[in-house]
Length: 150
Image (cartoon, rainbow, N blue to C red; front, side, top):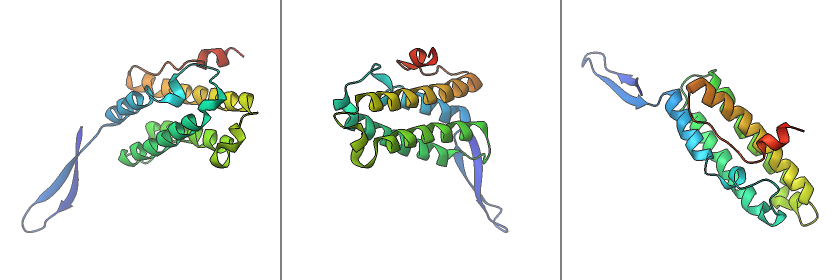
């Protein structure tokens, strides 16, 4: 945790400040948040009927990653790059589903699970980078190792 000055006074010799989170603290919060997300954690080859719930979970993850990015103070740090890549993976998954998830409809079991596998693989790769850099317990997403072998 750091301290960041927010304003100064000239003749009153005052300084206003706020506590800031370290990149490691933010990285740990991200790992903890993602470790419990439905779209990432419940088995490979999900039934297509769960597409809407997975899309909602992906939208929540995308929004939360944007919030974490707003907390970062270093404009070009590695954590920013990795979190942006994770957020893009969620955006790509949502886009693959199309408007209201129509591309993940009843006849699209393979398309849904392929997009889900790509999302998990991409997030797993970025999470491995983050956890390695900050020496954190990373994510162990189901299906990620299956897709890596292909």
